[in-house]
Length: 255
Image 1 (cartoon, one colour):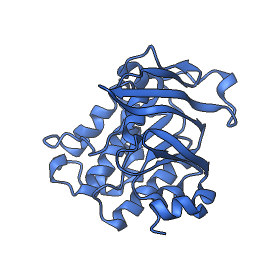
Image 2 (cartoon, helix red, strand yellow; image 1 turned 180 degrees about the horizontal axis):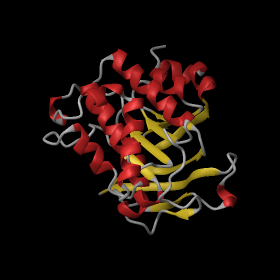
Image 3 (cartoon, helix red, strand yellow; image 1 turned 90 degrees about the vertical axis):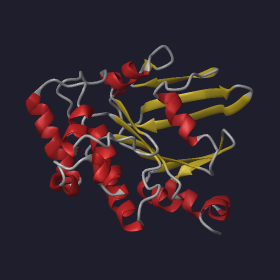
């Protein structure tokens, strides 16, 4: 994938260092009625990293991603992307900054063709040349989509639909890609293909924050990880260290 986004200004020079977090989250709290879904989540994602967010069902992983793109309101905390505070922004404004979310369940348009789904992902861009180049990039990443451009999205397999959902998100040429359970309901061989593509996306310069139920697969691709437990960060560290951590092994890797 191309790393330069011709239609979006580059971030300020002060945020160009790989050591400076692209995404900074401090003390985010989210409530659903009287339930505290997030209890002060803090995390950082540096430019060019793949960071995994792992934990059991109900730990708050999806809520964390949805809060970052302002789909759910915060009751406390702050978050910034490339120096821009996210709190005052709406979802469309966050997307315009260069943040793309691939939601759990994929949410493709089943009655539209693969090409039409991809073109909808390029709504931030109006240059036909750029859109065409980005479709070519997506097809290089997921050759199966190139073979199915005229098929309706609903006729694809689950793995192919996930490829389409990621490809559609990449059509926006994001700086930060948020992925929610990309391997959910997908055959193991296709899940590994998708995580291989995630590695390629990161190598091309796109930063990735991935929520994933397959802890081993996520930590094999990620540089660092955070473990969420009942809405709080229970542990964080380098991915290799988390793979060897006794608590992580017992809780998420089958002992």
